[in-house]
Length: 382
Image (cartoon, helix red, strand yellow):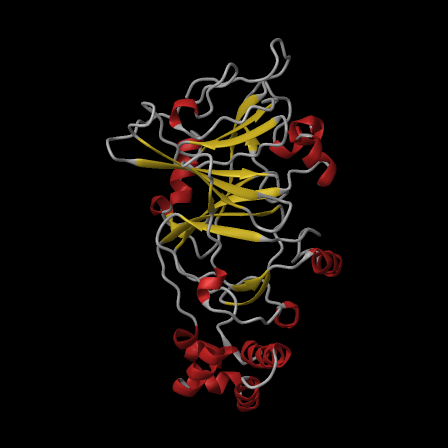
């Protein structure tokens, strides 16, 4: 891929440079080159060597202390993205710089999932600060962790609680489930159907807590009746720049059952209500926006297909942050670039103008075949 520059002429240091992202080898990840994460790593870093007997679970794109991307440009004195941002604060744009104290506010990931992840939840800001102070070895930062997952393949997962009516039905039909939830909690759940939402939440907390506090052997015996996930999945995740996770099962990592049982909201709803559909742009048919109710990030999806403007590019994934004068782009087969001083241009997603301007022109190394469609994912601070 050719060198790409942007910004004012005559600048002493390059304002566009490639990054090598950090890989997390959690036990639930796909093995070796079967993992999309491993393939992206190998394609972006010529020194990377993939071990076929090791899992490659997550590719981290950002500046979190546990996964600070390495700069692959010898002209840059800083070795990592976090170091570069600390010494080049204007790259964030004034709004992001002021709001998030000069830190990159999000962490973008690609996940390749082989087996079930842990039963987990993420703390809000107040709880994160408390947990980090009490146990920094298990909760490595004081930031909250709202997050959003976008499927790249067919993807199924557990999220939140079913409607109480459905839970009661399963308690009736699956005696093993009722055994783990407990008779008292089962009765409380059934009785809550004729009461208000607060009574339902209390009953849910009682039943879930009894389940999570059961002896490990009892849970293992009934696990297949309680938790089912589809393996061989890939997705991207975007979240606040945090690695705080409160876990309560299906993991060899630190488990904190009391905290998890206490922190949940215990609101029940149908599974369809847990989906977060994107909003299609009215001005540009190629753009869709995932905009969660948090200031840390939003994700934009761009779809391009051959025949629109003669587009010769294939973007497999993408990461973009646009904050006045900053553009972050994760491009092609695992290549991550930082483009700063981009100005206030924001080209439409139609292929004829996609990221082409007087300062920037980006090309991937593979063309689209007839009928193929490419997706460019985007992360931006609104």
